[in-house]
Length: 155
Image (cartoon, rainbow, N blue to C red; front, side, top):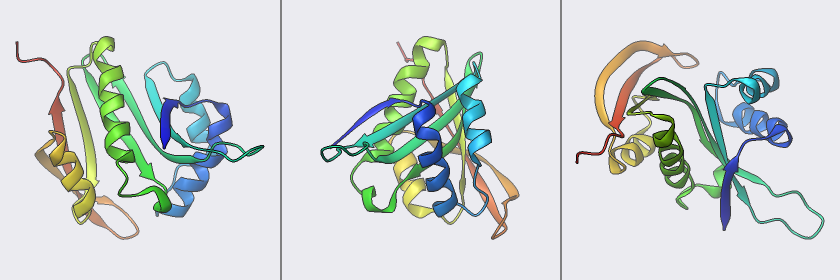
């Protein structure tokens, strides 16, 4: 089990550790910490269960920035031991739920063209390909698919 909460200072070192373990160009602690002061940022954490006297583990996180009606997903990561348990989907859907009252109508993200599991998840929750960024990623160099989802109700 896990719960989704807003990021706070205590999460920063654990997010930075997940970044370093999972990405070839990870965000450092200072960059993540700066998001706490950024009024355009919204970062959510999936916290797992803790044993007695232990800190709740960070199972995953999602970070975004929004400006007017547009939001960009900056980072999505789930710890290897928590994958395939719905954590990323729950984080993304909660992010969308929290962005709608802020007036966000459209959310965009980039994903490595080879990241089939992530692409499948984003497709499942309503994202569609709107473009490509050639050689966007480094280590290894790779194209990014640009995916987007409308959060406006069709009523």
